[in-house]
Amino acid sequence: MTTIAIDTLSRSGATDDAPLAASFARQPILNRDGMLCGYEIKVRAPELPLTPPAAAHETAPQARSSTNRETDDDADDALPGRAPTPAEHLARAIVHGLVQGDVRGALTGHPAYIDVSRDLLLDDAVLRLPAERFMLELPPSLEVDDALIARLVYLHSRRYRFVLDNVTKPTGTFAKLLPYAEVIKIDIALAPRGLLPKLTSVLKSAGKLLLAANLDAQADFETAHELGFDRFQGYYFARPQSSATRRVSAPRHALLNLLQLLAGDPSVAQLEAELKLNPVLVMHLMKLANSSGLAVGHKVTTLRDAINATGTDRIARWTQLLLYADGRKVALEDDPLLQLAATRARFMELAIERMPEAGRDEADAAFLTGVFSFVDAVFGGSLEKTLNILTLSRPIQAAILHREGTLGLLLSAVEALECGAWERVRELCERLRPLTLEDVAQLGLAAGAWAGVADRSAAGLERIED
Image (tube, rainbow, N blue to C red; front, side, top):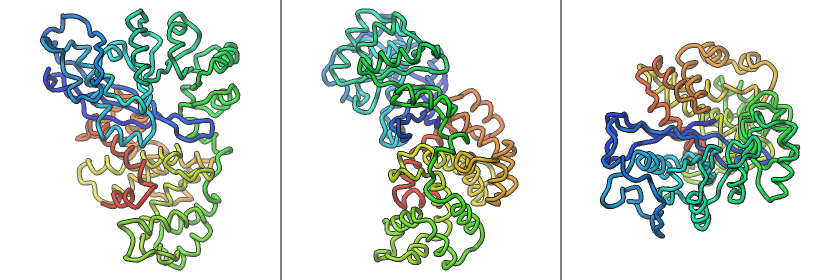
């Protein structure tokens, strides 16, 4: 799970007037064709102030029907005459973070699945979330009563859509919420295997979309796929066992040859000959060379001109990213493995720049560490052997294989960030000072946003070089 987040205020810094700040982690959701179709957002709730807001003991948050609250920037203000309760304060902090531009950028145009509490559902702050961009996940622990059902009906009338989260078997809460849910998320690791076929059949017959959660193995994905699931969540697509069914964008030996050539100081003629063996790379390189910022005053029409306009450094970075591109796809922003590799590489590069005495060489090494950290998902076989073929330096190999050195610690941090393992991130930051958890989270957000545009134009690659 690639993580996105914004800064979290300390307990002492939170006030009634300034909203708390929440943190968020995103995990990709794929469709039956293996393409990105959304992200689940995991929320790290902000810490409430030590002294509760005034009137915190007053009435619990109630649903407030207002036809224009969702477009009102003051929707997270307290009702006249009283301060917000702690629960309202928390709900509004979550919404405030979700509607920020940085979070929207990191979603790269995909819809977001967000776990919601009863307090958030009953607070009109939720109306600030664009209904077309957010799916509201209803947890199995949700207290269901007439007030909540009435609220779901009202929100549904405003075109909000609901997901039943963490379903393992039918329960009373499941039965009460089922009529209002569009998507049913089933944890197939916890659901009784004997029950799955019947459960999925009944739900599909009822017109529900099925989402399989916690898929970390190819076998689990195949089971869910055969049962007719529509959406899939987990990192099975980034595991070596999935490489047998993945079609890469160019022959493996050609990609390795090009990367080896780029590791040296190739001539334009050598690059031209090697690139001609990779039609997909040629197509993207021509597009890149003709984009604003790299164009040389006229339209680039030959491969040689494209090489000269782009430069070997950018071509090398481009090749490293396209190594993960699935040959079936044209829209690279929808390719989950490429997006994961690009996000991790960019995070590593941004993070190392926060460390003392880090320069351009260290940033380049960090990018390579991130981009090649799961190259075995493409090539299969021994990760160590593939890294040797790529002639990566020993510090990079040690970081990838054994999580050694600063690069290894940063790689561990981004892996924890991808899983939303906040305490693990905090522990690692103790060894990565002056980097803090808030820094790591913010850089994850920036890296996710960058990955969504890095493969569309020169802008992303130019930002790498800045």
